[in-house]
Each structure stands twice: as structure tokens, then as C-alpha cells.
Image 1 (cartoon, rainbow, N blue to C red):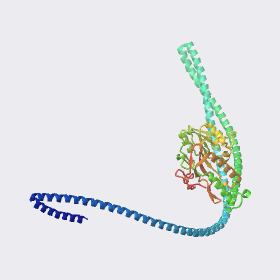
Image 2: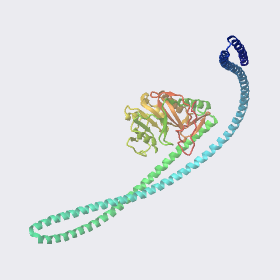
Image 3: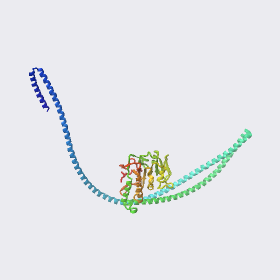
Image 4: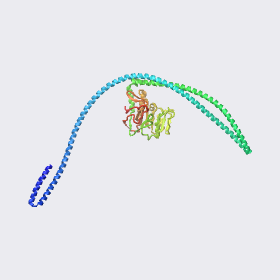
Length: 546
């Protein structure tokens, strides 16, 4: 097109020449013809430049529009092809996955049946062997414990007797010596007082000279009297002290011999009772373990059924499934081992706490007291707590279903805090089931958090135990939600009815009236947890969902 325009320009130039010649011939003036030709040439060139610029812009816009339509067409074509190929691949994958799953299921069932049969035979033989070995081992161990305990008790009694006799003789000697010294000081003071009074009278009557003589004589008399009294007292008291000590030592020795004999008899009776109790408990425990392992029935024929045991554990587990408190984090309170518990980090408004069960570990109590919370401890198995704190009050009392005598119930213990909200930590070695079973409807209203260590889940096959446990957990679930679980590895992880469940379980409950809850994806133990027994690994509970 540009060439066409240039051709037009050349024709225009030629035309211009013709016009110029015509003008020159008509006008007859060369100057006018030249000026007219130059003007026409400039006008034509300017028009050609404008036409060329507009033509370039139009071509560029046309090319861009064409490229955009081409790109859209390519994308539609490619998308259609990809969708068609993806649908084809999905069909192929589903068919092959179903076929592979069927083959895998068949192989797995065959292998599992063979493995179960082999393990059952091995288990029967192993249980028989373990029961025999365990019986011999327990008998030998108990005999050794008995001999050791008797020898240690006799040694301790003899050492205690010797130390007590020495202590009493020493104390009695000091007591008598002090008494003698007091008597001597009293006698001397009276003699000196009487002598001085007499001296004053003589000085007043006879003058200085006579007084000096009298003073010398009196001093000699007093000294002689004091010396005589001291010798007399020494002889008298030495005889009395020796006679008294001999009599007292003989009586004490006889009394201690009699006490030791009585203690030995009591010790032997206690050891005999303890051995009988251990033997009964061990026999019952071994019988129960063997019955559960072999799948034979327990009391009533129901306790040994693995399907019943599984159903019971699932029931209890669902009542203990953890949730998360919305907007509230958790923290560990107490020792980073046994005695520490994971709780909701919401303690600012709490001013009263109960620690039910103390023993020799009270770091939870101390940390709570350090936050300004008044802590009341209850434990009838110890004389005093291992440490003291100005905000901790110790009660040597048992937590029982009913408050009577020196025993406290959950309600009477809470009453010490008035109507204030409180936190309760309870670790009372299996008594928690009867205490909570006896709790009233209003006993949980003021409890913001309840930290519990549950015991004896290995007794789930016992009908009475399971009935109470289910009743307690359903009552707690009405007022609380579980926010944390942790297995205490001082107890075992039992597998009953093909359900793994710990013997000891630490559970933190939060009051439903105080918090909102949502599902949690936590895996237990969490980073806040720690093994109760440091030489063993923690027990893995997973999500603890049933």
C-alpha cells in the first residue's frame, strides 16, 4: 500500500510538472511556476505521511485482536481435551483401585486367620507356663520379704532400745544434777543471807573493829558450813542418784523388753495377715488375668465375655472423649513428672482450691498457693505435708462419701471456701469412685475445674465396679466436659476385648456453665505432658476417641 501511495505521489509530481509548464506558458513567469510547484509538493508529502501513520496503527490493532481470538480458541480446545482425558483416567483408576482392594482384602483375611490361630496356640502354652512360674516366684519372693522384714524389725527394735536407754539415762542424769545444783544454790543463798543479816546487827552494835573480826569469823564459819553441806549433799545425792538410776534402768529395761516382745508378736501377726492378703489378692488377680486372656467367663458368666468387656470400655471411653475449650489455652501446673497436671490456663479469678490426696509430692499445691490461691490439703495417710506455705492448710482427714467423725465429704471440704469458685484436684487411690458416686447434685456447681486420677480400669469386667464407674462418669458429663487426658505409666496399658485402655488415667474436667467447647484434633500425650515414671516411656493414647 505504501508503494501505491508513492506511485500516486510520482504521478502527482508529473502532474505538477505539467501544471508548472502550463503556468509558465500561461503566465510567462518562471518564478511563479517554481513557487507553485514547491507548495504542491510539500502538501502532498504531508498528506502521505499522515496516511502512512494511520495505516500502521490500524494494522497493529488488527493484529492484536486477531492474536487474542486465536489464544481464546486454543484455550477452549485444550480445556476440552484435558477434561475428556481426566474423566477417562478417573474411570480407569476407580476400576483398578476396586480390583486391587478386593485382592488385598482376600490376602489379608487369609493371613490374619492363620496368624490368629498360631498366636492362640502359643498364648495357651505361654499362659500355662507363666502361671506356674509366677506362683513359684511369688512364693519365693514373699518368703524372702518375710525373713528380711523380720530381721530388719528386730535390728531396728534392738537399736531403738539401746538408743532409748542411753537417752533416758542421760536425761535423768542431767535432771538430777540440775536439781542438786538448785538445792545447793538455795542452801548457800539462805546461809549467806542469814550471815549478812547477823553481821549487819553486830556492826551496828560493836563498831568497825568488832565488825571486821566478826566478818572474818563468819566468813570462816560460812565456808566451813558450805563445805560441810556440799559434802553431805554430794554423798547423799550420789547414793540416791545411783540407786534411783539402777532402779529406773532395770524397770525401763524390763518395760522395753516386754514392749519389744509385744511388738514382735504384733509384727508377726501383721506380716501373717499381710501375706494372706497378698496371697488372696495375687491369686484373684492371676485368675482374672488368665480368665480374660483365655476368654473364659468370670462372675455371672458375663465378665469374661470379650464382647461385653469391649462394649464396656467403649462406653466409658466415649464418656471421657476430650474436647477443647474455646479461646482458652492449657498449661501444666506442678512437677514435670508425677504430681503435675495439665489444666486450662484460667486461674486469675480463683481464690480457693482443694488438694485431695497429698502423699510426698505437693508441687501442684505450692504452685497454686504461689498464685495467691488458698489451698486446703486432705490426707489421712501422713502426719504432715512434706512442705509448708502460708496459704496452705493441712487437714489430716480422709475424703469419704459422708462427713462423719474426722472424715470429710466433697461437700464439707468445699464449704471451707464459702461460696467462692474453686478448683479440685483429687488423687485418693481408688476411693474417687465411691466419693463421687455419693456426691450431691449441687456439689459441682462451684467447681470450675476438676483434676482427677481415675484408678482400676482393669476391673472393668467386674459388674459392680463397672456399674458405679458408668454412673459416676455420666454424672460428671452432665456438669463438665473433658479437656485433657493422660495415662499414668505407673499403671499398665491393658488390652481387653481388643480395646487398649490404661489402668490409671488422669483427666481434667472443665465446667460446662463457664466455658464453651468444640471438637479437638489433639493427639495425647501432648507437648505439655510428661511421664509420671521417668524410667519408662509415656503411654500413647492417640486422639482417645471411641
